[in-house]
Length: 363
Image (tube, rainbow, N blue to C red):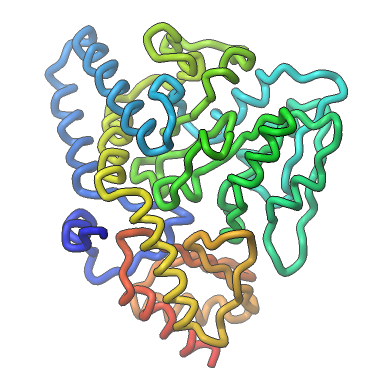
């Protein structure tokens, strides 16, 4: 059971604001903000030599806490600046043969797709399926004898579709295919066991449900995969002996505030329990869908994700935005659709308020 009183204290509301947009950006709990402040204060009075010692200690703590969250070894975690950089290191360093291919989904986020389009010899693209999201079988059915990698997001940015990663990972493991995952839309909200899912490589940004900030990210690389996928460029911070088998992916010029942010955020999530967080987030989604009633657009993929996607008439966008603003609700409203996303700081009352606005607009 989540301690909702403690969570509410960690995420104070700004004048009654209701934030239902973690798919776009997350919020930072007070303990993460305080960790930033403490580190900035210490940095002011710390020599470069001592600062490097402190950063190394903080990095190990961040590795340990993230490893606990994703069920891997600390040495399989490294840090970089973005999902784009993390995926690019893997795609550009992969030992491709001339006939090899990667399987991608057409509507996946550019940070995942473009590095492979640029680096892989051949790409097999799963096309967009009208009126539903992508599913594991869609990617499996695109595999041929030359497929070396399947790359996808665990939760789709466009519509919140959540694939059955365990099913896909089991297929990849049995067929000698590497599974590369962008987990930014689900990490911190949904349990992801990288070993159980046979994930070879994963990149994740810090600024959504991982409760950190823009400009920082981490990667997981399976220790066996790390022996055959070696980045084409190295940083002075990429030390395998000190950091572990994935250390050569550690290219971020380590700003210790970000490392403190990851260490503290992952500790917070681990203390709450990622399984309890997922259960609560998915229950919020179920509750919200029931409140929508006939407006519920239905599930678009293999599994629920805590994201509800709804198509809208472009003419309705300003009306919806006005009604949301009146209730101080922040959620994703785009020209032709809405993407409403829940995290563990949200409440059933938040879901009620959003459902009421939608019924007011559409009924």
